[in-house]
Length: 103
Image (tube, rainbow, N blue to C red; front, side, top):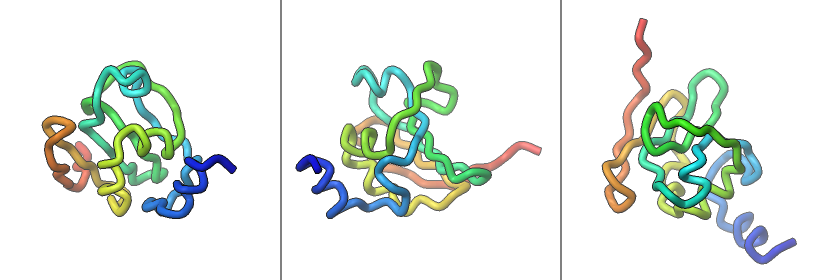
């Protein structure tokens, strides 16, 4: 087991496993943009890590990969399903709110 993997398992803050598949964008994966918008979907419990609500260039990666790219995401480990977290910049604090669905 790699040192990184061992450390991850010792301090992992999320109830989901580190290898859980999550949705993100190409810009985030390539390190060209920061994560400013996170959702924990009500219907399937999926996590989405984006630069904006409608960010293009979707990718699927592991939860571990996005958390290691931005350790502040650990603050959102207890984000309930059906909620989202947003911030103005990567140095700004997270703000949480329920996701409101249009009817």
